[in-house]
Image (cartoon, rainbow, N blue to C red; front, side, top):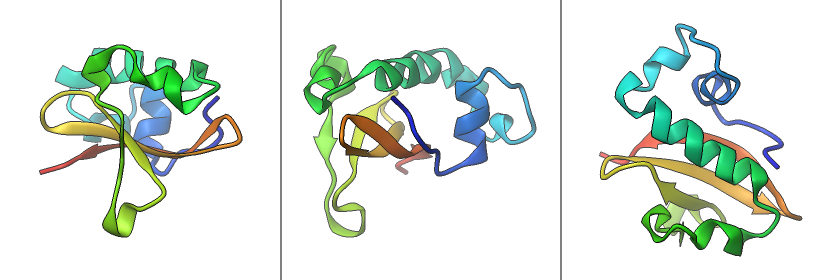
Length: 96
């Protein structure tokens, strides 16, 4: 279950709110991003996010150590911390 968000834009997108903040995320990825946020919300274990393989679940390094990401597309990811079966600090982010 998603417990917290790192950005208002991601929170609004997850809740289906078409706000100024949500529009900071390109509308071309809203459908896929929402589907993947729903997957993250339903996950009770990190391994649940390994399917489908296109998620490309990975543990992050460096300043993001302790966080994970799943792919939305080649450019955008959902970055989050996962503790006690819950997602925290969830954010849609541009990797480039």
